[in-house]
Amino acid sequence: MVKHSVVIAGHRTSVSLEDAFWRALKEIATQESVSLAALIARVDAERGEANLSSALRVFVLERALGRI
Image (cartoon, rainbow, N blue to C red; front, top):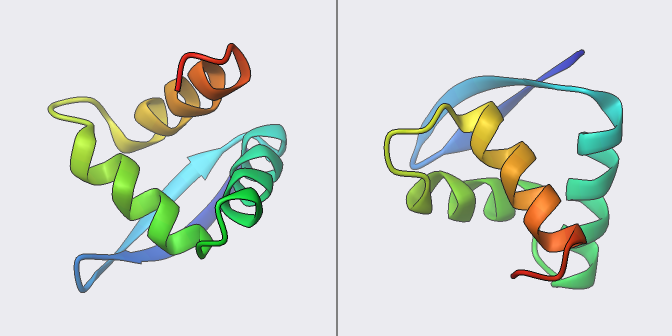
């Protein structure tokens, strides 16, 4: 697990993910020409009640499966 601090909606939060998920998120952010923080903020805004780390894992999985 790798913990990163990110700023979402003006507040700092820590997110713990496996390195493979961080690499995938950085790649997706690059492909979409957005910052990693902006990508995480988008997932955060759409996650509902899910834990942010879990929501990010699901986002990466769905992206890999071509669902989003």
